[in-house]
Every structure is written in C-alpha cells, then in structure tokens.
Image 1 (cartoon, rainbow, N blue to C red):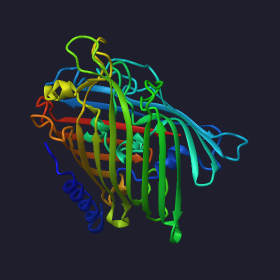
Image 2: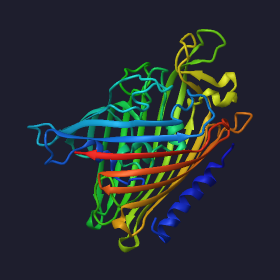
Image 3: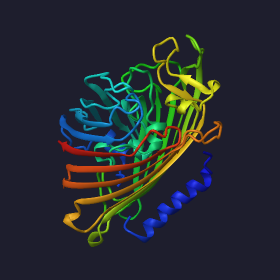
Image 4: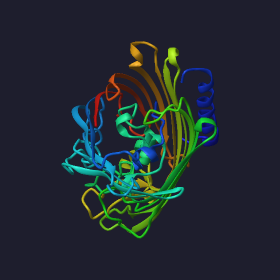
Length: 429
C-alpha cells in the first residue's frame, strides 16, 4: 500500500500538536541519553537494580506455532538484574552501566521461541565525562533512535512495541541469535544543554558509530553504522527522571550496510551487501494538569530504505530478485528473510489519567500502521495496522498492572487475529 508520507506525517504531527493545545493530552518523555548513560555526582560506586515482568498472552491466531508461539502463554517476559554507578576516585567523571536478562523474550530466545540463552547481557557500558560538551560512552547499549525503542522498557506504556518499531527497527540476525533489542556495540558522543528562563529548555544530541551486528556478537564485516539523534524540549514544572513532563520534538537517522546472501533455489546463494538506512521524527507531550488529571500524546514516523525484515517473504509477495537471507542458504533455515524494499510506518499514542484514585489509573489508546512496501514494488498490499486499547493501574510508582487488547489487521497474513495481554511490572532498586 503506497502511503503519501509527506501528507501522513504532516497530518499526524499536526494532530498531535493541536491536541496538546486543546486538551489534557505517556510514552515516557525523558532525556534518555542522560538517564541511561550518566550518573549523578553523588551516586554510589555500586547500585543494584532491576525489574520483573510476568506476562500473559492470549490470541486466536490460526498461524503456525513458529509464527506465533504465544497463543496462550504465561511467561516471565523480562527479569533483568543490573548494577550501575560511578568509578571511585574519578570525581564521578567515569560511570558504568551493566544489565542482564533472565526472562524469555527475543534476547534469550531464537526466532522460533526456542531457548537460545539462559541468561544474556543486554547492556555493558562505560561513560567518560571529562570533555566540555562531549561525553563519550563505550560498549553495548541502546542506540539513539525514536522513543518507542530508546525508552526504558520498564516504563513503556504498552506490552508490545508499535508495528513499525517491532518489524522495521527490532533487527533480526541469524536463526539462532537474539534480536538486536534496539542495541549495538560501539562508541557514542552525546550531551545536553539546559537554557532559557529557569532552564526550562533543553537541547540534546547523540552521535554513534556501531558495528551494526546486534548484541553479544563481534562484527561480521568491515562496515559500520553511523547513527545520530537531535532533540529539543520544553520542560514543565522543573520535572526530572523517566516520567519528565515536557513537550519534545526530535529527529534521528541510521546509515549502514548489512552483509547477507541472495535467494537461491539450492545451496550457496551469492554473498551480498545491501544498504540499510533508517530515519525518524518524534513528538512527545507529557504533562500533569493538576485537578484535571494527567496525560500524554506521542507521535512517531519512521522511514526505511533497504534490508527490510520480511517474515515468510510477506506471504510470498516478495519476488526472488528482492529476497535475501542473513545466512547462507546452505544453512538449515537460511537465517532470517529480508527484502530490498522501501518501508514506512507511524503511530499515535494517547493516554489519560483521570483525577480519581490519586491518578493511579491510566487509559491508553494507540493506532499503528506499517507498510514494508511503501515504494510500491510488490503486486499486493502487505501493510499491517493495529489499534491497541490499554489500561494501567499504578499500585506504587514502581509497581503497576497493564492490560492491552490489540485489534490487528494484517494484509499479508490474514490468519493473524486479535490478542489480549496482561502484565505486572515490579521495579526494585
């Protein structure tokens, strides 16, 4: 389905801005470069923290188990344990961040749901804070992309990501490897500046060079990814932390290449390199309106050029000349299928906490659309759309229950049906 991207983005962002001016609008607005990559000067050398997310999935999908192995499933979706802090005797100029995953998700499972790793390292980084205007972060950590992927998962409003971030940005590699988890290994320069009256404005940036080969893995070629993000924020009430009240706009990009194998009827498809470019725009609004409640409004648009994830080659719609695998076709399973296509997707997310029950109850609504063939290269429509209804109840700021219902419409796989999900999140530190 060919989407008029200019008109779509203009309409979505105009709707978002207009809604902020007329009504109580969270994707969680925050300076994620600061929260994930730095520590306060008074931080301890070792701070233990983590979170647990028991989850239940129920769907009436008619697809094969390998396509959806969570039809009726109780699961420890995430169980992460980490330490972070400042290195002693450095005047808080050096800090570190370590996090490991014990749960069952794309980091510890292979693409078919089998156990790939009992425990996996998700983050391991060191930040140097010596230079004026430039902080340098080294290691494995989240890449500077849009809110849906960059924000900390334990404050995410929804149980699943939007369609465009799940399909286009959550990169898949080999058949026995974890997903990229919006992370990579490399070095990032970043910083932010507060200015204006009462320092209520903020400008932040990040520029990263990364392997482009996911987590817990060495690079597989000589190519590197170049990534960058720039954000501008108007901060309300001098708020801080992962639920900061603000109006924020941002833009980001990824430019790189991927090494894979062309489709072949027999073994040994030709090795190939393909460009992988991604671009995005974001709008975040998160505010407490006092006696009128609290709410958020978020909109994101993402473009993709090349190396587009194409499960089952989108129901066979991808012609042979545009089919690629992450591994040689002599390997059983051939790795993960991709296609040389142009993709586009967007979502709008609205949430409101009414002024009852001490604002512990939140109603959420998200509409997401993703088209892996926005260049109109295929003979049929392969887009997918999801409307998600969400409900959250905050027992405490660190303990909440989430229930989601997805109305799903998948044009390349009509066997995909609606689903309901429930999740508890318990954060400790």
